[in-house]
Length: 111
Image (cartoon, rainbow, N blue to C red):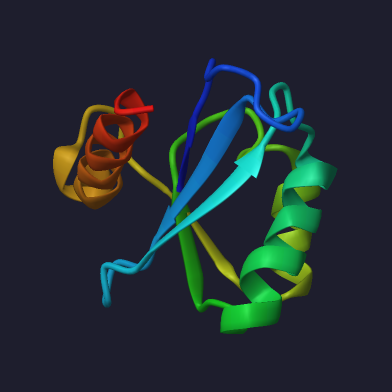
């Protein structure tokens, strides 16, 4: 899970939340805005991910301030979701998301 930020404004969105399922390699792209709060991120997950794909067993994310916030920690605890933080500069952990981001950015450059 990662954000692509500083995109040109489109329908009041300037960022894309990228979520990749590590087993199926399915990617979900959710338009959003920057900066975003932990509460907004939770609402995005509920409406765009949990409602369509169900609750995950675990979520792996970088150590960004949103993902280590007390709210996000409490939400994962209440929903019984294991929250795993990736190791900095560890390509095996976030390699899939990084590759998907590269492909998405190539598509965006065409427009």
